Length: 303
Length: 156
Image 1 (spheres, each protein chain N blue to C red):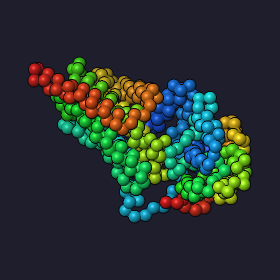
Image 2 (image 1 turned 90 degrees about the horizontal axis):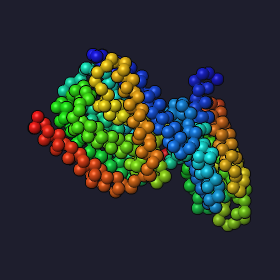
Image 3 (image 1 turned 135 degrees about the horizontal axis):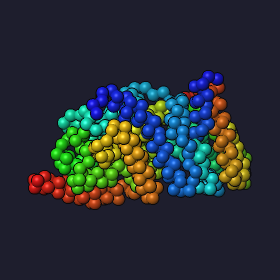
């Protein structure tokens, strides 16, 4: 379906869908964690209450270049996530251009970069520790993330998202999807890879000094990251045929199923130390990714 | 009160974030407070959650009789919490210094230094009492957000 880019940006899967969906996913994560711990958990509107309350806080007035930078990072993070979500090939036969997968990967990386820069800009010791941890973890998990995407691209013989979104029986495609799934906990900073935002040890890491509306923007950005990353995997596994509305429903259902899967992983594991997280990505996941990409390139030469 | 203010009042009442500060407590009240987060009491269903940084919090939960060493920390952390905010004094210690009264290292009670909104007496208080106290503080905070202007800016 050849829809207008404005629909993608503002209606579906853009702003009008993504913002309520981010609240729903965050609620789903908190509720599922609570149910797994035999608690009742928060009400459905809890993420909305939290966000609106933060917008109503009176924050200390800061002036100067650093203050503007501190406001810029969460805004940039939210904008890049909205852009990434709008690029997702939800509908079959959509627009797109050669190489848009590379832009999507770059947009998905911006929140992490903003998180690191926010930590260094705020000047707090705890924020700097959080930023350093995030930087190290981001380098480790991105090797696997990029190799997985290249594996999918080599198997699909294209860097165009609409081509990659058609499910193939090629094993390289599925190994790539598995590799991306392995990286999502580190990108979302949830257990077991949550060292960079550990609230008990380093007072929430990079966001220690944030308050009020700027913190609310970070919360929104985190929710949108959930939508973008789970949505990206959902587009890779939804079958290509069928009417557009079926695609939209499958997209939402698979994304939410991924949220539940990641929540189960997060509540079943404790927080890894930084060293252990890096060892996991460099030693196990990177080897898997290297093997899969070599196999995909070899199979391409064979065929 | 127009619709927007009423909605904001509801959001503030339904989403109190706590910052927990120990000012020389024996840990009894701290353990009782953490019990509130456990499956038996589950305060998350009321929207209550613990925050790591005072900047992110609305309600300051203070335990302990305020020792000389922690006094500056209490004042700093209180000023770091953004308006509208509320303070809950957990246990008998912040209210009356309890059995530590008269000690040369104790400079309490807490209300000499910062305004306290809710006292939850007990040594230690029951988790039900703590939850009731936090809920009361959330209502005070929501009313304050609607009625009052900012008294002063939080410390940088």
